Length: 368
Image 1 (tube, helix red, strand yellow):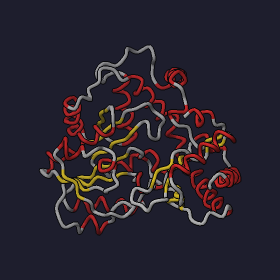
Image 2 (cartoon, helix red, strand yellow):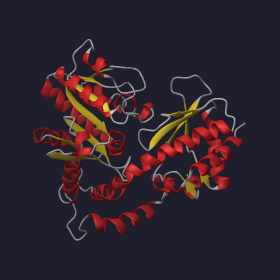
Image 3 (cartoon, rainbow, N blue to C red):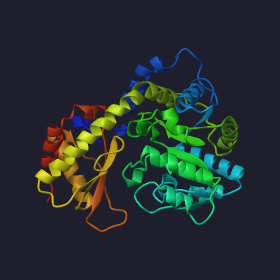
């Protein structure tokens, strides 16, 4: 962490790149532009928290929204509310979706929900898979983008058709939009039009917008009123949350308008990475997707993760260039194959294609 924090050249900053004092100072420096700091602090969700809910609902084009301390809680509540309304506890989602991979079976253990998988491919389900699935489901949950498949998205027309197919089956549609903020450039639509395809949407404030924590569930007023009740029951009615709410408002004001430039430059970086690996004589590699759908994507190499971790750390320590960070073993094998997630944000806009290729060449030289 200390080495990566001290690196001079990065594609993106991460929360661990700043000390606690630096983060608090940055929050205080920017908060006055986002909200009146002479206002009284929030108490159980009023004040600045209510303003973040209002602003988010407005951006997403929904009549109401509720702030949650975590996206996991927000989606637990959303899907159990929809299950009660549809009369079906079955949720159709991708096997790589966040609730299936990163939430320890919470849908099943806490909410009594049952999940089914429409496809096992590294993409969102298509129209035929939704329309022809051989058992009923009450809700279709789409993670946009699908992070563990490489931050992938369907085309706009594919998304519209999939939503329509779910509705033909009398299923509601919920978007896991933890990173929905990033999708406007790919779809060529404003966020309100994208979110408006769904019956409800969850968004995160720290994954794309640089916030501290927290999430918002947006939807119809009656659903959000019910969600607030379940939020309390789940322990999410927190006494004061003004730091997270202020950081969320700052993200909406300052980071959200910049995301399209990050997405555009991620395509340049991805192409330069591929060219750099080819020029360095790497026998096999994969940049996935080849043309990123958002400002985040995966890179795969035929080495053990600890070997790649060591090379990334050595490069950052010796050259001040942080090209890659943590590498992960392939979750489905074979051994000796690993991937990393690349994010291109404000610091990465300074990198030219030549800078990326030079960094790749230096990184490859450090591999055995």
